[in-house]
Each structure stands twice: as structure tokens, then as C-alpha cells.
Image (cartoon, rainbow, N blue to C red):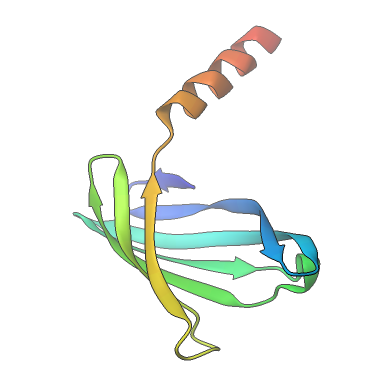
Length: 101
């Protein structure tokens, strides 16, 4: 995800663990940040049979966002999440890009 001012956006490519095996899933993300309050929606695009939206609401503290996720189309499907910004991953990616130039 990327933050531009108070706007969040990006794309997520993940592997969902299922009883019948791993399933690839792609989603677009859009949301907002206002002070320490973060909210965003993850819209699955149908890859791997996944086509729904997951809503996230949480609080930003340093490099972490902690909060609650829910699936509006499936009431009762909700839980807690913790996201941690990966500075080492960012540094490695920047180094790889610079080496290619």
C-alpha cells in the first residue's frame, strides 16, 4: 500500500490457505488516513474464485496499524489485524532498483 497525503491505495497479491490447497488472490486497496485513524477496503478481483470486499479500520502507532477487519457481505466474519511496515523490505527493493539502473 502507498500513502499520498491522506489517501491510501495499492494492490495486494496473496496466497490464501484452503483445505484443498493454496489459492492465489489479487485485490485492489483504497482508503484513508486521518491523524492516527486508518480505514481501507480491500476489493478482491475474482482471481482464485475470491470476489468480495474486506473492510479494515484501525489506529496507526509508529510503524504499526492495529484494528478490526470485517466482510460486509458475510455478517459475523470479522477479526483483529496487525500490520507492520517492513522497512527492511523497502530498503532491499530500493537497492535492487538502483542496481538495475
